[in-house]
Length: 114
Length: 115
Picture 1 (cartoon, chains in turn green, purple):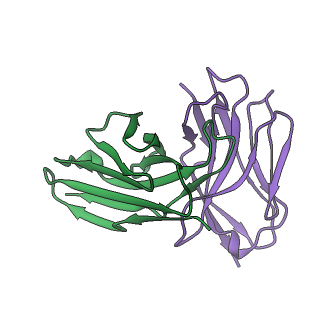
Picture 2: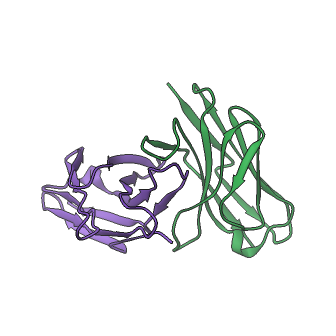
């Protein structure tokens, strides 16, 4: 069975500090990987996606970056956090493109920027 | 761009009563989007509840149903008799079957079941 694990579960960070959120998928080779974000009271929106190691496409510009250093790992990061980065971050994977199939989400990371 | 509008905020329903959560979509560049309902139960990750990829078809899961209505651009979620275990946040979403790797979500509806 496939599993997806996100870390950390929650973070409280200061404005201007760096951030790294991670996601690991086990039991599935070459998954498509995604980062989603939901601001408080806002809509879940896709930030990045990756279909292979080393390749990441940006969907929304939020002064964040993403990397896929290994087939089963997806990292979201920034060197300087903004207040607007607060929210809930979800990592997800899928078997195919176009979302005719199912998207599998992690449990999420809650980020509070003060 | 594409958008999804669903019943906002919180919906409270008494146990064994019927439920409807409204969802309408606007897909300016997609003739026939794929439509989904996702759910997040307390303490769990977001998971697929049901999906429909063909206009006019109905999807069902765990007693919930939703029909893809292209004429009214709607995909309302219904259940005839809710249970306490249905308490969760429900999200309507659409995607482009043409290959764009993106789900467009509604804002989510929190369902509270009163015993």
